[in-house]
Image 1 (cartoon, rainbow, N blue to C red):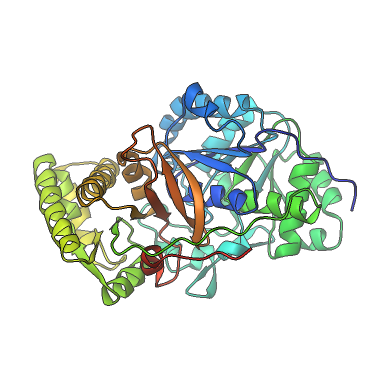
Image 2 (cartoon, rainbow, N blue to C red):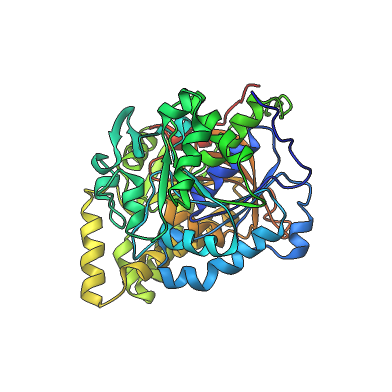
Length: 458
């Protein structure tokens, strides 16, 4: 191996996540590699940034995944400029590891166009992350579901995602619907044969501005990280999932640039937690069913009520009272909008939106914000120390309602969803423990693990 470029002092990776759950996964990849990382839940002030100035990873959780290109044009330039000013060698636009996007919503292509105007050089794209059950072969993305691998356009969830269904597994072809920037490829064969650099040179010579990097296993993960770190401009703009942070950490570790990580302390069981879920994933549906059998009380909240502001506020009051009653009896409430994609509540919501002449996007935003206010009120009234939010888009809106402005990782619950410590200038909120769970993340026992605690080995 060539002499690796050393790690400079200060921030190594500055990232913006297009949703909250994915942002916590990027934080996890760096933090559990021994690099102190903070995730802000809104664009931080200079004063708030100074409180974390020694941190090696700095992230901002966002909502771009649920926004249109016009919103990105109005908001992302300022955010990317702020990240650029942090002086990190790598600036990362973090996307979901199932590449959730479309030309009209969550456009990864539009975000990349904006970044390409601010940064020089090639734009690496790493989406796969074996630790999360995501694999890329010859540019095609595959994802596990219940331990079984699927090409993304045949994945049981992503092929029929309610907002961004995936009809193409070749990420370059999918991205071509969203940007005119050319996308090349460094495939796993060249990586394993030691010709990753020449393959990258060839892609760049052909005019590719974006270069997608295959990742199948630890070897290709390390090689992808090497290509990004050793072939970077200053600073380098990159696109991808938490696989980018995982690849960099894997290379830094393999190159001997990281100290041995310390064992994380045990996270103890709590008697009661409160959870809210806006996910319609079948994975989350199984987790809800498992939780109800193992000590949780499921409470359905009528998402269709959100088309009318007054009806929605009444629903929130009713469900909050029900959740507090559950807690008073020593159980843990799990409030959910649906139990998977086939739940009749999904169709009922769409019909209510259509009948009211409302916007589905605005209604979903209202649901997410309402679930956050509900969880905040329940946690404050019951003096809870740990809560969970399930659903990528839900988390992006709900977490903002909890009175915390930054997260640091405490311990892993499931790959991509760490248990976090909530930071706040409000003493009554500082220290709240929070887990943000994406729809595809976790085993059936996820909510139970969040309640019962974990112990991480060195």
